[in-house]
Image 1 (cartoon, helix red, strand yellow):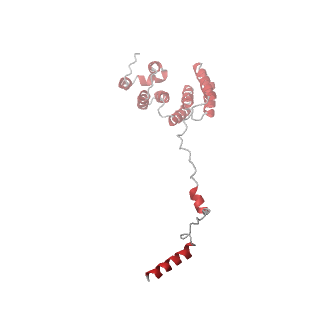
Image 2 (cartoon, helix red, strand yellow):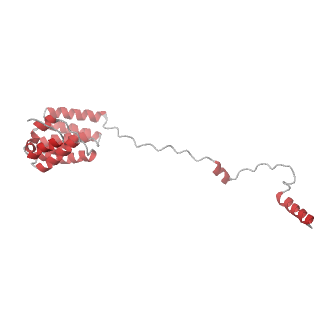
Image 3 (cartoon, helix red, strand yellow):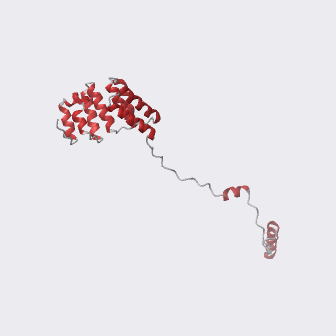
Length: 195
Protein backbone atom coordinates (compact mmCIF):
# COMPACT_ATOMS: atom_id res chain seq x y z
CA UNK A 1 0.00 0.00 0.00
CA UNK A 2 2.85 2.31 0.76
CA UNK A 3 4.31 1.62 -2.72
CA UNK A 4 1.03 2.52 -4.40
CA UNK A 5 0.79 5.76 -2.51
CA UNK A 6 4.35 6.57 -3.45
CA UNK A 7 3.78 5.87 -7.11
CA UNK A 8 0.60 7.94 -7.06
CA UNK A 9 2.53 10.85 -5.54
CA UNK A 10 5.25 10.59 -8.20
CA UNK A 11 2.64 10.49 -10.95
CA UNK A 12 0.92 13.63 -9.65
CA UNK A 13 4.26 15.39 -9.29
CA UNK A 14 5.20 14.35 -12.83
CA UNK A 15 1.97 15.73 -14.24
CA UNK A 16 2.15 19.10 -12.44
CA UNK A 17 5.85 19.80 -12.92
CA UNK A 18 6.07 18.66 -16.50
CA UNK A 19 8.56 15.94 -15.77
CA UNK A 20 11.23 18.45 -14.82
CA UNK A 21 12.07 16.79 -11.57
CA UNK A 22 12.55 13.38 -13.20
CA UNK A 23 14.65 14.50 -16.15
CA UNK A 24 17.83 16.46 -16.34
CA UNK A 25 16.38 18.80 -18.93
CA UNK A 26 17.01 22.33 -17.82
CA UNK A 27 14.31 24.87 -18.13
CA UNK A 28 15.11 27.90 -20.24
CA UNK A 29 15.01 31.08 -18.32
CA UNK A 30 11.72 32.84 -18.58
CA UNK A 31 11.55 36.36 -19.88
CA UNK A 32 11.10 38.70 -16.98
CA UNK A 33 7.68 40.16 -16.61
CA UNK A 34 6.98 43.87 -16.89
CA UNK A 35 6.77 44.15 -13.12
CA UNK A 36 10.12 42.42 -12.71
CA UNK A 37 11.66 44.85 -15.20
CA UNK A 38 10.41 47.79 -13.18
CA UNK A 39 11.91 46.39 -10.00
CA UNK A 40 15.22 45.50 -11.63
CA UNK A 41 15.95 49.01 -12.87
CA UNK A 42 18.04 51.09 -10.52
CA UNK A 43 16.41 54.11 -8.99
CA UNK A 44 17.33 57.38 -10.69
CA UNK A 45 20.25 59.07 -9.02
CA UNK A 46 19.21 62.25 -7.24
CA UNK A 47 21.80 65.02 -7.22
CA UNK A 48 22.94 65.91 -3.72
CA UNK A 49 21.13 68.87 -2.25
CA UNK A 50 23.05 72.07 -2.79
CA UNK A 51 23.45 74.81 -0.27
CA UNK A 52 21.68 77.97 -1.27
CA UNK A 53 23.90 80.21 -3.30
CA UNK A 54 25.48 83.02 -1.35
CA UNK A 55 24.28 86.40 -2.41
CA UNK A 56 26.85 87.83 -4.73
CA UNK A 57 26.34 91.39 -3.62
CA UNK A 58 25.77 94.40 -5.78
CA UNK A 59 26.99 94.30 -9.38
CA UNK A 60 29.90 96.48 -10.39
CA UNK A 61 27.63 98.97 -12.16
CA UNK A 62 25.61 99.56 -8.97
CA UNK A 63 28.83 99.99 -6.98
CA UNK A 64 29.99 102.61 -9.48
CA UNK A 65 26.71 104.50 -9.06
CA UNK A 66 27.11 104.35 -5.28
CA UNK A 67 30.65 105.70 -5.55
CA UNK A 68 29.52 108.50 -7.84
CA UNK A 69 26.77 109.34 -5.35
CA UNK A 70 29.37 109.54 -2.59
CA UNK A 71 31.45 111.90 -4.74
CA UNK A 72 28.42 114.14 -5.20
CA UNK A 73 27.79 114.08 -1.44
CA UNK A 74 31.35 115.29 -0.75
CA UNK A 75 30.63 118.31 -2.94
CA UNK A 76 27.19 118.72 -1.31
CA UNK A 77 25.37 118.13 -4.59
CA UNK A 78 22.44 116.38 -2.92
CA UNK A 79 20.20 116.08 -6.00
CA UNK A 80 22.80 114.29 -8.09
CA UNK A 81 23.80 112.15 -5.11
CA UNK A 82 20.17 111.06 -4.66
CA UNK A 83 19.94 110.34 -8.39
CA UNK A 84 23.05 108.11 -8.33
CA UNK A 85 21.90 106.23 -5.22
CA UNK A 86 18.49 105.71 -6.84
CA UNK A 87 20.11 104.23 -9.96
CA UNK A 88 22.23 101.93 -7.76
CA UNK A 89 19.06 100.75 -5.99
CA UNK A 90 17.32 100.15 -9.31
CA UNK A 91 20.24 97.99 -10.42
CA UNK A 92 20.40 96.13 -7.11
CA UNK A 93 17.23 96.48 -4.95
CA UNK A 94 18.93 94.86 -1.93
CA UNK A 95 21.64 97.54 -1.75
CA UNK A 96 21.28 98.62 1.88
CA UNK A 97 24.28 100.96 1.65
CA UNK A 98 22.66 102.88 -1.22
CA UNK A 99 19.42 103.26 0.76
CA UNK A 100 21.31 104.42 3.84
CA UNK A 101 23.36 106.99 1.92
CA UNK A 102 20.34 108.26 0.02
CA UNK A 103 18.72 108.80 3.43
CA UNK A 104 21.66 111.01 4.42
CA UNK A 105 21.23 113.09 1.27
CA UNK A 106 17.51 113.42 2.01
CA UNK A 107 18.30 114.54 5.56
CA UNK A 108 20.56 117.27 4.19
CA UNK A 109 17.61 118.49 2.12
CA UNK A 110 15.36 118.32 5.20
CA UNK A 111 13.24 115.60 3.56
CA UNK A 112 12.99 113.65 6.79
CA UNK A 113 10.09 111.38 5.85
CA UNK A 114 11.89 110.12 2.74
CA UNK A 115 15.05 109.70 4.78
CA UNK A 116 13.24 107.58 7.38
CA UNK A 117 11.68 105.41 4.64
CA UNK A 118 15.14 104.70 3.23
CA UNK A 119 16.64 103.99 6.65
CA UNK A 120 13.87 101.49 7.42
CA UNK A 121 14.42 99.78 4.07
CA UNK A 122 18.18 99.60 4.67
CA UNK A 123 17.61 98.13 8.13
CA UNK A 124 15.16 95.56 6.74
CA UNK A 125 17.77 94.41 4.21
CA UNK A 126 20.67 94.35 6.69
CA UNK A 127 19.62 94.76 10.33
CA UNK A 128 23.22 94.81 11.62
CA UNK A 129 24.67 97.50 9.39
CA UNK A 130 26.38 99.87 11.83
CA UNK A 131 26.35 102.79 9.37
CA UNK A 132 22.60 102.52 8.93
CA UNK A 133 22.13 102.68 12.70
CA UNK A 134 24.49 105.65 12.85
CA UNK A 135 22.27 107.39 10.29
CA UNK A 136 19.23 106.58 12.45
CA UNK A 137 21.08 108.25 15.34
CA UNK A 138 21.60 111.35 13.21
CA UNK A 139 17.98 111.38 12.07
CA UNK A 140 16.66 111.17 15.63
CA UNK A 141 19.13 113.80 16.81
CA UNK A 142 18.05 116.19 14.06
CA UNK A 143 14.42 115.58 15.06
CA UNK A 144 15.31 116.21 18.72
CA UNK A 145 14.15 112.69 19.65
CA UNK A 146 17.06 112.20 21.99
CA UNK A 147 15.97 108.98 23.72
CA UNK A 148 15.65 107.26 20.35
CA UNK A 149 18.92 108.80 19.20
CA UNK A 150 20.67 107.33 22.24
CA UNK A 151 19.11 103.89 21.64
CA UNK A 152 20.32 104.02 18.03
CA UNK A 153 23.77 105.11 19.16
CA UNK A 154 23.92 102.08 21.45
CA UNK A 155 23.02 99.78 18.53
CA UNK A 156 25.48 101.58 16.28
CA UNK A 157 28.36 100.89 18.63
CA UNK A 158 27.25 97.32 19.40
CA UNK A 159 27.45 96.56 15.65
CA UNK A 160 31.06 97.77 15.49
CA UNK A 161 30.86 101.39 14.37
CA UNK A 162 34.32 102.88 14.81
CA UNK A 163 34.33 106.22 13.00
CA UNK A 164 35.00 108.15 16.17
CA UNK A 165 35.65 111.47 14.41
CA UNK A 166 32.04 111.41 13.24
CA UNK A 167 30.86 110.88 16.82
CA UNK A 168 33.02 113.82 17.89
CA UNK A 169 32.36 116.28 15.05
CA UNK A 170 29.25 115.43 13.02
CA UNK A 171 26.93 118.47 13.28
CA UNK A 172 23.91 116.15 12.92
CA UNK A 173 24.77 114.77 16.38
CA UNK A 174 25.10 118.10 18.16
CA UNK A 175 21.76 117.63 19.98
CA UNK A 176 22.52 114.15 21.25
CA UNK A 177 26.11 115.00 22.22
CA UNK A 178 24.71 117.46 24.78
CA UNK A 179 22.74 114.71 26.51
CA UNK A 180 24.39 113.32 29.70
CA UNK A 181 23.72 109.74 28.54
CA UNK A 182 25.82 110.23 25.40
CA UNK A 183 29.14 109.76 27.22
CA UNK A 184 27.75 106.85 29.27
CA UNK A 185 26.82 104.94 26.12
CA UNK A 186 30.27 105.60 24.65
CA UNK A 187 31.95 104.40 27.85
CA UNK A 188 29.75 101.30 27.91
CA UNK A 189 31.30 100.37 24.55
CA UNK A 190 34.77 101.45 25.68
CA UNK A 191 34.78 104.43 23.34
CA UNK A 192 36.47 107.53 24.71
CA UNK A 193 36.46 110.65 22.57
CA UNK A 194 37.74 114.10 23.47
CA UNK A 195 35.95 117.14 22.26
